[in-house]
Image (tube, rainbow, N blue to C red; front, top):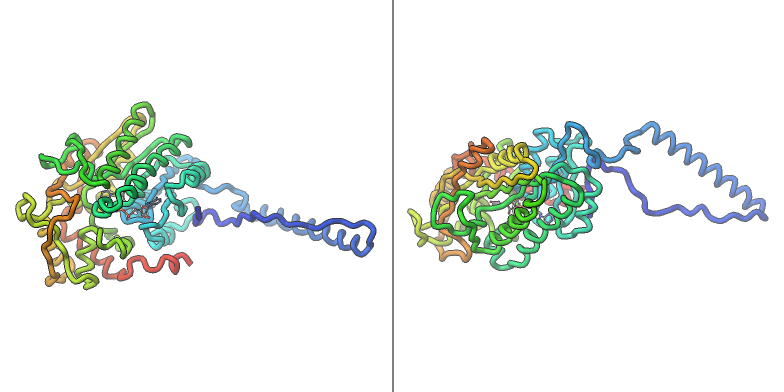
Length: 418
Ligand SMILES: NC(=O)c1ccc[n+]([C@@H]2O[C@H](COP(=O)([O-])OP(=O)(O)OC[C@H]3O[C@@H](n4cnc5c(N)ncnc54)[C@H](O)[C@@H]3O)[C@@H](O)[C@H]2O)c1
């Protein structure tokens, strides 16, 4: 576990210093001994003066203390696309934030941007750790005073989950259990959980409400549903405040252009439609591959509900504010409007200004479902949340601006961290 918290700059030395043995018979050695005593005394006095002049060196990390008026949120997966946007919003709203991420898919560059925006002590710390490592996770909870957890960290590609299901059950289901257990052990009382519309599978009736039966059809959706079930079973006899947010397809980026979506190049083949669209517009890939044209939808391509990341993180903050002990809130987070892949491609061409993007129509992709869009009435009624950024082309334009000015994503994380 590597802690890169700004507030924790003290060097901890695990090495003890040996001062050597004593020999009373030799006068030369005796004078050495006196010299050493003097040296130690001088150093000790110097240390005392330094510590007195610099009380912050003695003070415990602000992240370790519950402070009146300060609400401390652990953001798992905060170096990733949605987690970094959520951390930005929380910091803007004066929350204290700890990001835990193993950087398997996220970007240290995103964390660096957040640290530059909020450099004050006690605002943001980053802890490099894997949530699958229960010991490290326990250490994090024992060394920090969290008020709530927003659990974003996950692997999150439907296609990849069909190829490597165990990775998904481990990373999503098992790691959520670890986080939940550590929350209980350390008395953290609020959980906001990132779930997905993939838990519904392919329902007969649209739009999807929170009561639509959950019958996931791929390991990603199943792993998330299992994690939800664990949380729900646990909640029956717990006073934890829980909010489960089932996101639809997330697009867009920070309107002020500080953060964006920058998945690892090796994940491109599993990637999401907006990433593919931008890669095609930039000529990184030869064109777009639309998988499936014979679905029972108006134009034969899949229909999805695209939710802007700015709206999504707003839903998280509202969920956090309305979370109540002993209660579980489950909410769809979507616009309520379905858009076909063909519509998306046209919006992408207009947003990027690259009208000649080549589009290839292929067979269906295993694990995909035809039509998915939400009924967001419940979240509107109960959390007073509604999607505001519903112009697909505008959301894509915002994301495209970031993509154009970040041709290499966040750049080389090693250079960034230097
Ligand atoms: N992007 C979407 O359209 C979408 C839709 C529905 C739900 N979600 C959910 O939202 C959450 C965030 O997704 P995202 O799109 O930002 O993905 P992302 O890959 O950009 O971010 C996930 C982050 O989690 C980190 N992570 C993964 N495994 C970890 C582990 N074991 N320990 C510590 N850190 C780990 C990654 O390094 C990465 O920074 C996920 O839970 C995902 O299932 C996303």
